[in-house]
Length: 399
Image (tube, rainbow, N blue to C red; front, top):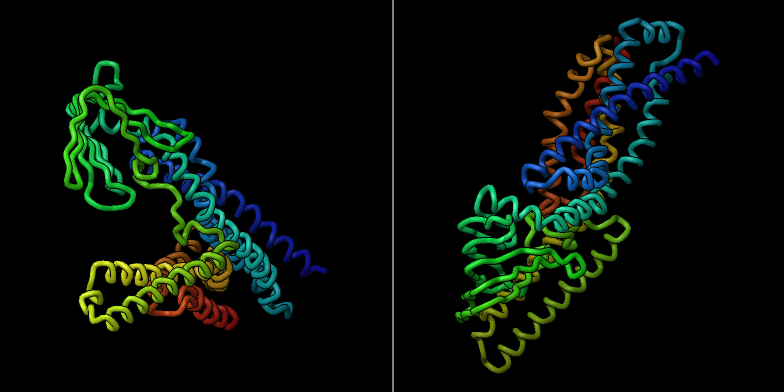
């Protein structure tokens, strides 16, 4: 009975400190994320407020393991410094009796962290992209007014000689866009232009006056007014959700893997049929044609996507269960250090994690994504912490 009350006391102390630290750490991460978007996208205050719900799961994703480690190290470090752990051991109670409830709680929290990781990438990231996409009109005008140019990663750029007195007219703009189907970029120049966003069609409308379009082997002059539309996903610096493995919910990854395997199989069948026809009719140049290379490129990129799809569930589970393995290392190290200072215990536990876990995790993730190592490799960081924690646990027992 006494041991049960002691365990409840320990878990309650950890819960209180964890809750306070989680609010502080997650708020800090949210402010950092909002500031990053503000700097990168030149967003307004109201847009930043719209972003906050989508930034929350990302903040919790990083804050959960760190705050749990902080709370565990603080409480067990203080218990050890006050000789409470020693007193329990002197009464014949093994240290594992006071460690097990916290390990079980961290295991349950790891399951919650896996769900938060899934929400962050499958709901949070597309939500951030969508908010940025719908604020593109304000973003573009702000960039043009302050820098005279705007560009996106998809090849959309605008250069102007100035902004009109009404703050809306673009003077002598030069616009470059890349067609969705690929090919040579289009260059558009005009005497003036105005921008407007159509949220229904999700396009950026460019109302041109006395424009000229060049590209893809043609040149056309359009006197008077004309309208050119750019998809918002092409106009923004981020683009919208594009089916990237990191933005697919875990429940849909199995379907995405099957679809990708089917696409790869179809491309391989096309290659085989084309090779058979080339050999059959003596058209050996077909084997080295642009169409053949394009199909080979689709197969190669499809296999790369397949690797990333296979790795994604493993990555989310491994990241979520870092909560458990952080605690597995933090408890015995804090007991062995016997420091009542919160930050001393936390710093001593977090530094080896920072120097060992994250590099090993990053290496395993990169190797698994390119197919060099199996998807299970993303758990290497956790397995290292498992070994380190077992060694410290043995040291704490002997102490």
